[in-house]
Length: 146
Image: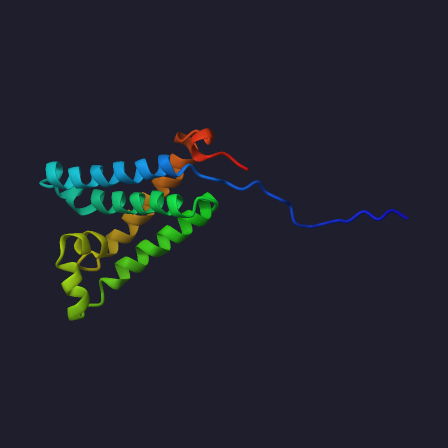
Protein backbone atom coordinates (compact mmCIF):
# COMPACT_ATOMS: atom_id res chain seq x y z
CA UNK A 1 0.00 0.00 0.00
CA UNK A 2 1.10 3.48 -0.77
CA UNK A 3 1.13 5.98 2.04
CA UNK A 4 0.54 9.13 0.04
CA UNK A 5 -1.08 12.00 1.80
CA UNK A 6 -3.69 14.07 0.02
CA UNK A 7 -4.34 17.60 1.19
CA UNK A 8 -7.32 19.50 -0.22
CA UNK A 9 -5.66 22.81 0.65
CA UNK A 10 -3.59 24.26 -2.16
CA UNK A 11 -0.60 26.22 -0.95
CA UNK A 12 -0.49 29.69 -2.43
CA UNK A 13 2.62 31.85 -2.49
CA UNK A 14 2.49 34.82 -0.12
CA UNK A 15 2.72 38.41 -1.22
CA UNK A 16 5.38 40.52 0.48
CA UNK A 17 5.11 44.19 -0.44
CA UNK A 18 8.03 46.62 -0.45
CA UNK A 19 7.19 49.14 2.29
CA UNK A 20 9.36 51.86 0.77
CA UNK A 21 7.31 51.81 -2.44
CA UNK A 22 4.01 51.81 -0.57
CA UNK A 23 5.18 54.57 1.79
CA UNK A 24 6.02 56.68 -1.25
CA UNK A 25 2.59 55.92 -2.71
CA UNK A 26 0.84 56.98 0.52
CA UNK A 27 2.81 60.23 0.62
CA UNK A 28 2.22 60.92 -3.07
CA UNK A 29 -1.53 60.41 -2.85
CA UNK A 30 -1.66 62.54 0.32
CA UNK A 31 0.14 65.39 -1.45
CA UNK A 32 -2.07 64.97 -4.52
CA UNK A 33 -5.18 65.17 -2.35
CA UNK A 34 -3.97 68.29 -0.54
CA UNK A 35 -2.99 69.88 -3.86
CA UNK A 36 -6.39 69.09 -5.36
CA UNK A 37 -8.05 70.92 -2.47
CA UNK A 38 -5.74 73.89 -2.67
CA UNK A 39 -5.48 74.40 -6.43
CA UNK A 40 -8.68 72.84 -7.77
CA UNK A 41 -10.99 73.36 -4.80
CA UNK A 42 -13.09 75.89 -6.70
CA UNK A 43 -14.38 73.17 -9.03
CA UNK A 44 -17.39 71.53 -7.38
CA UNK A 45 -16.68 68.05 -8.80
CA UNK A 46 -13.16 68.07 -7.38
CA UNK A 47 -14.33 69.48 -4.06
CA UNK A 48 -17.18 66.98 -3.70
CA UNK A 49 -15.73 63.74 -5.04
CA UNK A 50 -12.03 63.66 -5.91
CA UNK A 51 -10.79 64.26 -2.37
CA UNK A 52 -12.83 61.37 -0.98
CA UNK A 53 -11.67 58.99 -3.71
CA UNK A 54 -8.05 60.02 -3.12
CA UNK A 55 -8.53 59.58 0.64
CA UNK A 56 -9.70 56.00 0.08
CA UNK A 57 -6.80 55.40 -2.33
CA UNK A 58 -4.36 56.65 0.33
CA UNK A 59 -6.00 54.39 2.93
CA UNK A 60 -5.67 51.45 0.51
CA UNK A 61 -1.94 52.03 0.03
CA UNK A 62 -1.59 52.58 3.78
CA UNK A 63 -3.29 49.25 4.39
CA UNK A 64 -0.97 47.58 1.88
CA UNK A 65 1.97 49.20 3.69
CA UNK A 66 0.91 47.95 7.13
CA UNK A 67 -0.43 44.54 6.09
CA UNK A 68 2.21 43.78 3.51
CA UNK A 69 1.54 40.04 3.38
CA UNK A 70 -2.20 40.31 2.88
CA UNK A 71 -3.71 39.55 -0.50
CA UNK A 72 -4.93 42.42 -2.64
CA UNK A 73 -8.55 41.44 -1.99
CA UNK A 74 -7.97 41.32 1.78
CA UNK A 75 -6.43 44.81 1.77
CA UNK A 76 -9.27 46.09 -0.41
CA UNK A 77 -11.93 44.60 1.86
CA UNK A 78 -10.31 45.91 5.04
CA UNK A 79 -9.69 49.42 3.72
CA UNK A 80 -13.17 49.69 2.26
CA UNK A 81 -14.60 48.57 5.60
CA UNK A 82 -12.42 51.10 7.42
CA UNK A 83 -13.49 53.89 5.06
CA UNK A 84 -17.18 53.05 5.40
CA UNK A 85 -16.75 52.89 9.18
CA UNK A 86 -15.23 56.37 9.23
CA UNK A 87 -18.11 57.65 7.09
CA UNK A 88 -20.69 56.06 9.37
CA UNK A 89 -18.95 57.62 12.38
CA UNK A 90 -19.89 60.99 10.90
CA UNK A 91 -23.47 60.28 11.94
CA UNK A 92 -22.28 60.52 15.56
CA UNK A 93 -21.85 64.01 16.99
CA UNK A 94 -20.74 64.10 20.60
CA UNK A 95 -18.69 67.05 21.89
CA UNK A 96 -15.51 64.98 22.27
CA UNK A 97 -15.46 63.70 18.69
CA UNK A 98 -16.56 67.03 17.25
CA UNK A 99 -13.63 68.66 19.06
CA UNK A 100 -11.34 66.17 17.29
CA UNK A 101 -12.99 67.01 13.98
CA UNK A 102 -12.37 70.70 14.65
CA UNK A 103 -8.62 70.14 14.28
CA UNK A 104 -7.11 70.07 10.80
CA UNK A 105 -5.84 66.48 11.12
CA UNK A 106 -9.03 65.28 12.80
CA UNK A 107 -11.14 66.86 10.08
CA UNK A 108 -9.05 65.25 7.34
CA UNK A 109 -9.25 61.81 8.93
CA UNK A 110 -12.75 61.78 10.43
CA UNK A 111 -14.63 64.15 8.15
CA UNK A 112 -17.59 66.19 9.29
CA UNK A 113 -20.92 64.96 7.97
CA UNK A 114 -22.30 61.76 6.48
CA UNK A 115 -22.86 61.91 2.73
CA UNK A 116 -24.08 58.91 0.73
CA UNK A 117 -22.01 59.82 -2.33
CA UNK A 118 -18.83 59.48 -0.26
CA UNK A 119 -19.43 55.73 -0.08
CA UNK A 120 -19.27 55.53 -3.87
CA UNK A 121 -16.10 57.64 -3.83
CA UNK A 122 -14.53 55.16 -1.41
CA UNK A 123 -15.39 52.26 -3.72
CA UNK A 124 -13.80 54.16 -6.61
CA UNK A 125 -10.67 54.99 -4.57
CA UNK A 126 -10.15 51.45 -3.30
CA UNK A 127 -10.93 50.06 -6.76
CA UNK A 128 -8.34 52.39 -8.23
CA UNK A 129 -5.84 51.12 -5.65
CA UNK A 130 -6.56 47.53 -6.66
CA UNK A 131 -6.11 48.40 -10.35
CA UNK A 132 -2.89 50.30 -9.72
CA UNK A 133 -1.46 47.52 -7.58
CA UNK A 134 -2.51 44.81 -10.01
CA UNK A 135 -1.54 46.42 -13.31
CA UNK A 136 0.75 49.41 -12.74
CA UNK A 137 3.13 48.27 -9.99
CA UNK A 138 5.58 45.67 -11.31
CA UNK A 139 5.75 42.50 -9.25
CA UNK A 140 9.36 43.22 -8.33
CA UNK A 141 8.26 46.45 -6.59
CA UNK A 142 5.26 44.83 -4.97
CA UNK A 143 7.79 42.50 -3.42
CA UNK A 144 6.79 39.54 -5.53
CA UNK A 145 5.77 36.31 -3.96
CA UNK A 146 7.82 34.43 -1.40
